[in-house]
Length: 441
Ligand SMILES: CC(=O)SCCNC(=O)CCNC(=O)[C@H](O)C(C)(C)COP(=O)(O)OP(=O)(O)OC[C@H]1O[C@@H](n2cnc3c(N)ncnc32)[C@H](O)[C@@H]1OP(=O)(O)O
Ligand SMILES: O=C(O)CCC(=O)C(=O)O
Ligand SMILES: [Zn+2]
Image 1 (spheres, rainbow, N blue to C red):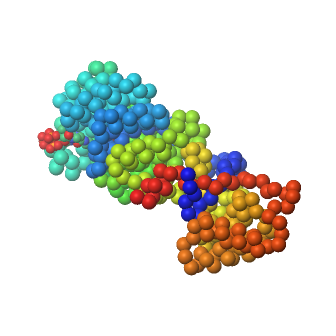
Image 2 (cartoon, rainbow, N blue to C red):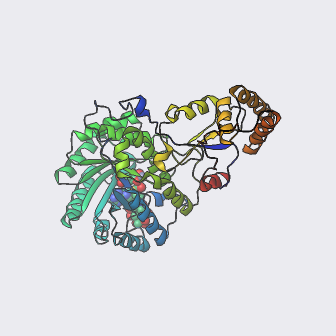
């Protein structure tokens, strides 16, 4: 693996924010007495919501590969496309149910007996039922009023329950629905023993404060668990998911890279980043975070997209530090500029030192890596030379190494004084092949 331009791998050290800050300020707020931040579950919907992404086509083999990878990662539920969508969708649903995965398998249907009858025959562990409750959807999607919705919900729920299968009822477009209508329907379905109720921000209009309020209100009305589903049209999908958990929701719908209708929903990786900052022990005890990169690559490949350069955790530069001030502090203690530790995800941090924003501390670290000996003053001098060239053009590692080596050669001092071999604490290595390849694509 060759080193990409200007990057230097930095050794992992056991510095965590917790060493400096004993109590995690990013953890659950004790005032949120209903919080499930330390007790949440994932409903992974790449194979349902994700299939609604414009670029998605999953063959049976790909679906199985994705389902197995998600199961290995540790998701609690895997949600699959409705078996009434197509004959192959039904067969795929049956095939995934037969895999014997640890995760519970769900399928997602309309609130209609025709769909429910097909769903329960597939072998799923549970059925997620949804129906639009907002004025928009009642008028322009299915055309049904709240009385009809309540009646069909009760019929479908009782039928699915009679088959010994988990059942969730969700209102589509919850945040544009009338609150009294919502609470009434949720109370009705809770009374007849639904396993979960779902809130869905179908158009991505909700903000975290609205989410918190709705979840808290709903929590006072139902006894069952609350699941939440957030679209990302206005960029709030991760924040809304976190706030929902603070308010007392227990389950969050996610998909790999957030793929779904339009620009998608809460991404699995992004939510993991948020949650590990809040409760590292819980997240590490449940989910194999070092698998995230492979899972994202698998799905990115399947739907023919690149991993976004600024993706949480796996983005090209998610753990790369460039400016001299940052590099100095990172070399002393990574927690200075990292809330997440790359090692938790099986990843590496880098210092990008081949640029004019670099500082002598970063260059000194590179000098050490090259097994050369320069005094601090000499490191400062050579840094000035690097900055001068960096003002003229984009630099790469070879440029910097040549400047350092030439500077060193010009000095009369021996390369390494006998008995003073500097300890090599950093290894030069490139970014992982896949992320650098993707970035170039
Ligand atoms: C917000 C979400 O993401 S919800 C999940 C979306 N998932 C899907 O749509 C799964 C893929 N969909 C499909 O394959 C098809 O849409 C099918 C098989 C479900 C239905 O196909 P069609 O019968 O051809 O209907 P079409 O897709 O044109 O319209 C949707 C129909 O479902 C009805 N409908 C929509 N939502 C619901 C609901 N939640 N509960 C009951 N009926 C509903 C509509 O009234 C409409 O029926 P109509 O035109 O016969 O009156
Ligand atoms: O079933 C749900 O809770 C969500 C359905 C959905 O995808 C949405 O409303 O955006
Ligand atoms: Zn959705």
